[in-house]
Length: 250
Image 1 (cartoon, helix red, strand yellow):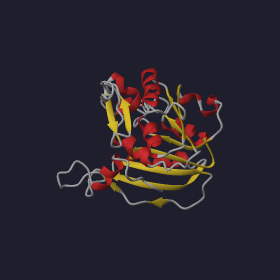
Image 2 (image 1 turned 135 degrees about the horizontal axis):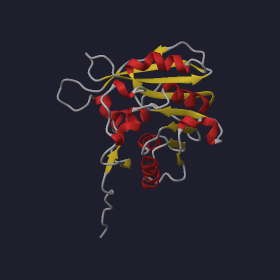
Image 3 (image 1 turned 90 degrees about the vertical axis):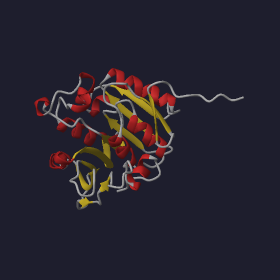
């Protein structure tokens, strides 16, 4: 008789069971933003993906489940989170193509001493100024407060991709102008997808896609709407993304 192996305590099942993720009971937990970011990285086999601030590996493991043959590297300054990301790589059978470095992006991409990547992605902390919001719980501070500012995150990503390489960022919609201004130094060919809680409400998130040295005109893509008024938890499109059935293409 075969006995089923149950996931360890404190785990979540993502993408209809394709990913098992160990997450802390307190602190930042990968959720919708991580799922959307992973769905927006249509990397090809043999391409290399870099994530700045990978946390426990919620984005990287979902990209790996969606995209076979892709190599992944995450950098995370929180020692507990980076340790869990290593465990999550092993738990999902990804140790041969997912690497996690305990380090700080403030040191710059060059400090990694790696060739530039095909993709660089991130869900940066949403706030630069701690006085702008009620103080987060200590375990969540690193995920909410960008001590070195958004510019450091954008520079790391821009430096981390080759010419023609792609950057994908999910962030607050009200920081869109800041993101585009910071990316414009080295990148172009912008594509923007608003993410709305409901069809009749303003976007709260944006997914921004940029190409290093890109010259194409900016494109504003159709919005992704997460909820409707039917009583279902998510719209059919959002639910399909969470199940790993569809991607958010560019």
